[in-house]
View 1 (cartoon, each protein chain N blue to C red):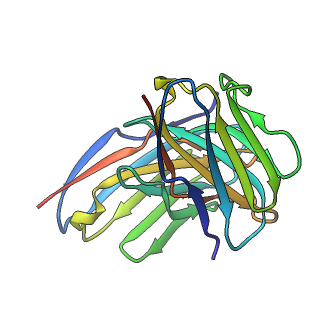
View 2 (tube, one colour):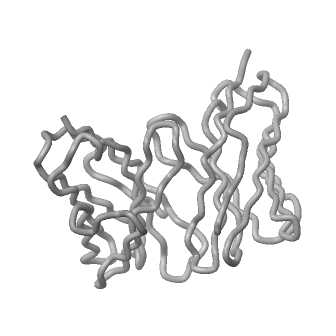
Length: 116
Length: 109
């Protein structure tokens, strides 16, 4: 149990376009979802925390108008990278947390974004 | 501030034992996680410690000392497939994970 999926697993887009990444909890309800970014040879960097039905909380330095997060249901959160630039190329990972399990996050397989 | 320290890289021999250390300073503490991450993949859960002591799970064990802000991951009978990055992460008072930079473990035959 506790499976999280991400779609797409990899995407290549042109500079200036927008890309949407989906994160789904397949067999549980995720009251909280997290979005991370990871550059090569670096650790995970938390971008934002989203709770179902409310606005996401962004970490310092993360542009909320560029990285749009929507957590419309208890099983789906989306991250849209708007007006993508080559420096946005990275590995984006989501994780999900159940309502009563504050200590554990279940990770999706990640999405590799390449902006050309 | 919040900080997690772990070695950048370690090398060990197949069949041997290796210990990866992690020290942490966080605003509040609700436990410590170890994750394994292979290149190009998401982290996979290895262990969670919230009480002092050693937790053993097959070839992997994890230790925690809350008073010292210290944890280690012990890997026994190393196999080539254990070559990966090992991430230490502490759960702070807001139940957010504070991540270390990861330790790249290289296993040699």
